[in-house]
Image (cartoon, rainbow, N blue to C red; front, side, top):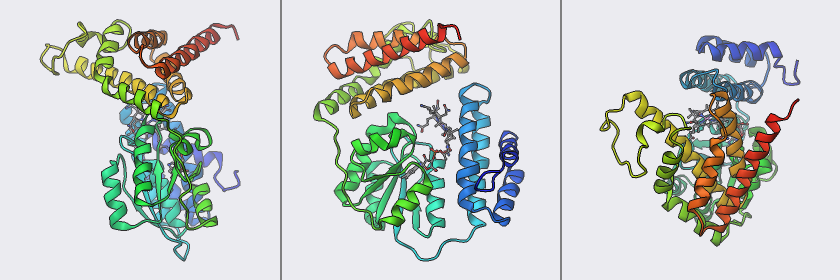
Length: 368
Ligand code: B12
């Protein structure tokens, strides 16, 4: 039994509900816990959040399909809503929080859990859901006048977008609290981007806000002009670099062969006689490479190799689980380095990425 009253058996039951997409069972379990005196906050943070981490592991290891992950996440979302609705809300509203995800960030559930925890603690909360552009955020800030914007980032390659959101809020005079694993260990990259506050989870966030309300603007971006310049080069050259990678990796990377016979191939989907499956596989392959390029660009932007090496570690595990030779990632870093001679920071980041891959490869060959 844990301090919050959620036992291992309860966790196992909830995992089984997610595995079976059993909405009824999950809601009964969660609402039952709240009725028996477990706080809704504990249900959200001690039951649903860790179960979602396990969902991610099962998807990443290839045990679950994307469809199964979607179904489980849907049940988790319903569970969050039901548990929160079954609990009393603390009285007295300290003020208003606007919860948002950066552009390109579709991990909404983390921000939704945060929103519900803050609401249960008495804050007035408005939630914007996934992938919000800086323009949309600005207009909502002007319309609703929040005391603080809570910005969620799960994926590190979205950091440059998060920077734009933080800058937008700074221009509007509203402080930003950042959170989510995308902001790095102890929120390192949140502070680098100029966020005013960071919290590791929703409970810490609520407590930090209640301790020092209203939050004030104090953050300062340490993003350097030279880094932004190299980042812009990577963004501008993204299509060309991606086409080159697809060509270089066509024999080793799943799904790329069918549509990468020449580096200048510009066929639109369906015109080369490929089957729907090969078109889809090709798109998935280029999406994957695109995300690796984006994490290289994000690493250059925040001037921290770990953004890139972390993504390479994820890609290595992802490939290994799918019997794809992770060595193709070394080929990828070399192919990019060949094309990016004029970008010294990018070359350093690629070299760090390459070293991390080679070290991991050597370690994996060492006898236990
Ligand atoms: C569900 C899910 C999805 C769903 C999201 C649907 C939804 N409605 O949310 C969908 C299908 C969209 C998705 C897509 C992708 N996903 Co996904 N996803 C997940 C999964 C399984 C669960 C996410 C979740 O709900 N977590 C639970 C919450 C509670 O997590 P949390 O971050 O701990 O949140 C707490 C704190 O971080 C904090 N917090 C969060 N935000 C904020 C904000 C503030 C201000 C504060 C103070 C605190 C705070 O408070 C929260 C509560 O305490 C995770 C696994 C995981 N480990 O999280 C993978 C995971 C995040 N996804 C992953 C990947 C790779 C992807 C894709 C790139 C896959 C793809 N297409 O090939 C895409 C990218 C989409 C995009 N651009 O955003 C990887 C990321 C790995 C990596 N290093 O890149 C993960 C880790 C899976 C894995 N194990 O490999 N995903």
